[in-house]
Image 1 (tube, rainbow, N blue to C red):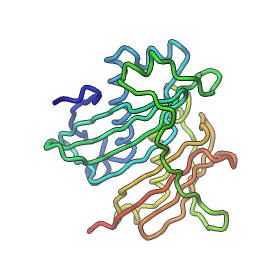
Image 2 (spheres, rainbow, N blue to C red):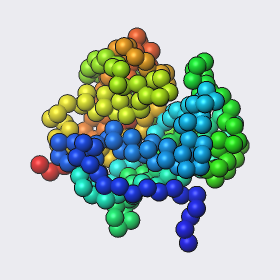
Image 3 (cartoon, helix red, strand yellow):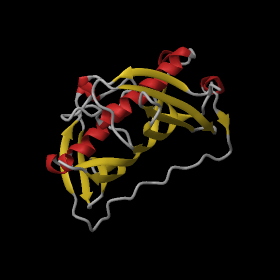
Length: 248
């Protein structure tokens, strides 16, 4: 039986979506997940054009991302997404990336909200923008735990990045995938060559805008890392990564 609440698109991994080893990159995993949600909204006639015409935009507040295996260039994958429960201000959406045989490669839970694009604050979710997805109302949503924070007495490595014009998306703030770039890049090439991420819990706190300078900080462990993105000493995002060692 086909689950009509699950929306799916199929595509091959392109070379420009992959890292130097031909694996789908972390930022592109996020971009493809959002692509699936965008295409679902467009098909239901409640996509980006509709929300923007009403001065609204969907934003993601938190990701809980599990990676079993990153697909390779030219590999055929299926992207699935389902909108779960919602309350007056928040909606849950899940994603899966499957291989051609239906094996789960990536699983993502996420929490979404709608903002007034001009006033930059959250608004109540209009039912006509939520119910067509098959979402179900709930008094309480299952909360994604907060990621572990960098402690004040820990010495963190850090790297600075300037927010460029092409980092900004249609909601007039930094695209979510850029945070993954900043957090992964600060780990350094030597670590990234010998480790593969298995889980990311990333929570957004404050928006980052054009021409600001962000500081990406990290505290590394053997199989984990804790991350913080700051702008003018204001926390923009925090995350916790889990890693496994890989053979060279």
